[in-house]
View 1: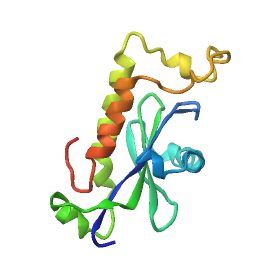
View 2: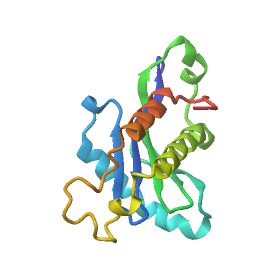
View 3: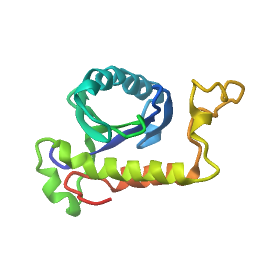
View 4: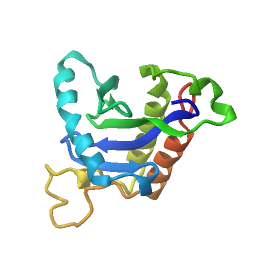
Length: 176
């Protein structure tokens, strides 16, 4: 693993009814979307199993290590929305700025807290948009039945903020 540092491979936002609201892959041309959809779905049981022991708006830490390369981390908001970050442990080549992170053997749960906080802030900013209606993205309300593609978050500002968070994050970053 010398010469590389962990990077974010996928960010998923999962609704309170376990419906995927947003999935971003990094870099998208090198990732299989279906594989990551399955990975995100597989972590929902882990959230449910740990939920009785957690309060809302908490870091769930490592959800599962998929293999020696991919690891999934989770965060639950106070609205029941789940944020999941999949980290690629051999993600990108190290630069001079990553010299300390390149020597790290693994990740601590606290390494991802700045990314989760930034994601939660981006989601809050999306909710503050008067033109965004979160009920349109819920399978329970039935409003999205006849609208193709309306179950996903399509806000360009939110999507660009998610990309910025993924591009900015590296182990040891304390503020995004």
